[in-house]
Length: 118
Image 1 (cartoon, rainbow, N blue to C red):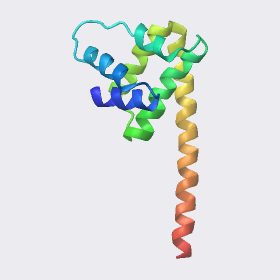
Image 2: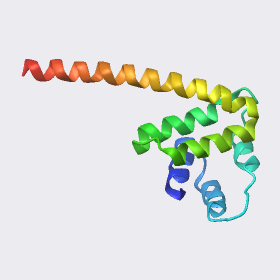
Image 3: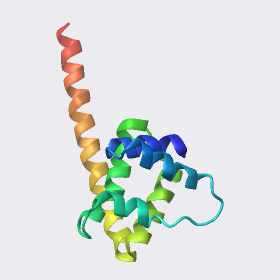
Image 4: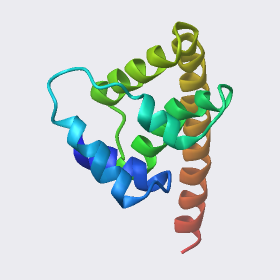
């Protein structure tokens, strides 16, 4: 969890001092209010919809996985942002998956053509 969080914060260009300050909360066993982290982003309400999509994108492209732990984190974050955000995220998540699938198919087809030419 710590390494995922740290790499995600670096992806968002959050300073090292802020990352270190937030990391201490990951080891806590009690509820941690995400408001300070979200306030650091300085996004308006509409932009907050990007948070779960950024986590999803980071998980897939930087970590190479999108597992149940990440999805649970996303549900927690989106529910914090508002119940309707989870419903919207599920739609966005599906669209992201379809788009990623199409892009990977194109890349695979290109790779196959390139290898056949050799």
